[in-house]
Structures are given as structure tokens and as C-alpha cells.
Image (cartoon, rainbow, N blue to C red; front, top):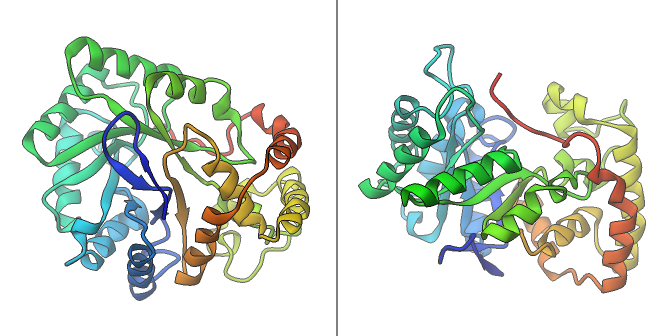
Length: 324
């Protein structure tokens, strides 16, 4: 396993991290625990979840699976998206964050979170309130490091500026949709993060599985695929993306690897990326994704991939989760 520094901190995370959005939803308890144990045995030390994944079941499953193994992982969770119907059950106010941290600690059966992330920017809460709350969490020992997610570049830069001005701990990472099918972060977020020493943790690195090449058309979904098990995912299926997956497949064949591993290898090639979150509903999927660590991209292949996907720098991001 390869390990990289997370931002400008001294924390080391595995180049591939385990995403757990499917745990308790598309992957049951037993399968989820097998995936977690397989990941740890393979050297993966970064596990990412959130307080709202599968209606809190993801955190609960992880907490149970990590008994006796908690010291082996860098555990990351998030809060800030809508948790319930109440007006204070969302956002990044002190009121909401302090409550959600305690709930996450209880479900995860741990006394601290290694990376606590604000799930999205909150227009209704002053940044100083959010950042001072996170500072208090760190000082209490319940949080080690802090990160952002779904922030625009200017929002993240403003947060870093306030932290520096007030002498507070800074965000060391940010999560965003980033892949060969979504290169929009390269317009502003990537250069800003490189300049400020903030790592990017890509989510949807395979565009929700589209870059695996499993979809031949918008109307035909493989059995057990996300498009079948999660009807809302259909909005992401696009002819342009399906064609891209086919084109990437030709390049992957030249390298003797799958389209998935090629796509992950490209992200791992980006200097701003610390760890790539890969989800799985079976342990076999995780093991397949680990093959990306051994894919060597020549300068010629990098140039070819850049030319093929340059248009995906424009337009809307593949995904962006914001408060209503």
C-alpha cells in the first residue's frame, strides 16, 4: 500500500480509502464488515463515512466492525447536510455540529474522530462560528483534524483565511467530485489547494460506476448496479459519459487493465490527491480497485487521457451536494 500526507499535516493516509455510503443500504451488515476487514488486511487505513449515510446505519456498522481494530484506521466522518426535519438538524452551526459529533462518536464506538469534515457550506452560519466550534472539538480531544466537503474554491479560501487570522486549526482536506468524467475542480479548486497545502479527497472517482464500463446505454442497467438499486442514480447516466467509458476501455486494454483501475490510477497520478475514496458492495470489488496502485501511466498515456477528457473541465460538476 502507498501512503501520502493529508494536506500539510503529518497524518499519513492510504492512497486508496474506503467509502462507505453503501453500507446498510446496498451492502448488508455482514458484507459491509467483510469489506472493512478486507480493506484493513490489504493496508487501507482511511475509512470515510458520514452521519447521514444509510440513515446513520453506515456509522453503526463501522463502529461494530472496528472493535479491536480502531487503532489501525484513520476514521473520517462528516456532518452538515440535512439530518432531519428540524431547522437546526442541518448546517454547520455550533448547536448542530456539537450534537452530531456526540452522536457519531456513540455510533462509531470511539472517543475521537481522526478527520471531522463539514459536509457542505452553510450560507446561514458565520464561518467564524463553524471554525471556532471545530477548534473547540480539537482542543477537547474528540477531533484530531478537520476537513471540508462540497465547498467552492472561494468558500474554502475564505475559511482558510479566517482560520489563519484567528490562529485556528485549518482545514487540511476537502472532498469533491473529481474524475476523468468530472475535471471541473481543475479550474479553481485544484490550483487553490496546491497553493494552500490542502489535499483533495475525490468522491465519485468512477462517476458512480459509469467509468467501470458496465453501462452500455442509459436504458440498460446491469443487475445489481447502482442504477438498479438506487433509482435516483439514473439522473447521472448520460450518453457522453457512457461513450467516454468505452473510449477509456480501449486505452485500458492497451495497458492490460480494466477501465476502473485506469480511471483510479489517473486520479492517483494527480499531485493534489491524497487518497481516493472507493466504495464497494463486495470484498471482491475492493480487491479489484486495489489493482490501480500497480498501474503505471507513461507520459504518453497521461497526454492521451488529458486530450480525451479535456472537455470535462467545462460545464457543471458531475455531483455537488449543497443545502437547500
